[in-house]
Image (cartoon, rainbow, N blue to C red; front, side):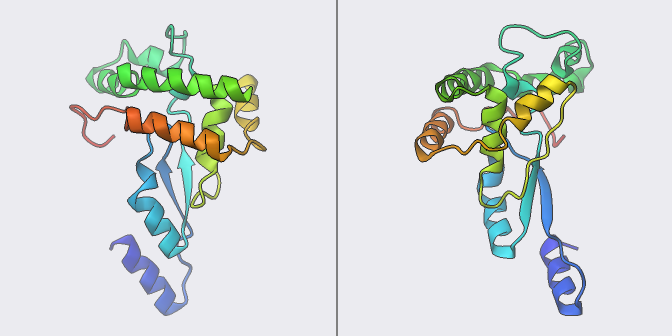
Length: 177
């Protein structure tokens, strides 16, 4: 049964309705800004985005090297699926996007992590952002976004990057993951 039908059924029978949906949503995966955002607003359902750092890509840690033990470092020696995922998340387009975003973060005096988390949670259809961390330092960097509100100029700069490099995640050869 489609989600809209379930919500209608819940309304008709006085049952609990869906209040949130979860989807991957980040500075390099902005697909939720189109149709899903419209549905969330219309149906009064909020988005709980997960992976606002896209597996650590938006921390910038893969810019120069592959850190030992990091997710995509391990994917380098993985099977065909891991290789495809690696190419999707770490490619020339994502690297170019991250370099541009680093400049914005530096101008704000925050980490790339804080910028990415703040951007993710700042949308009107987002209730909260699901973060993950494997160290206290990573957690601290994400939590630094708690009070960070990006002004219109910063949002415009981010949007300009997206216009220049739209959806840098490549879908080549991938079925839905």
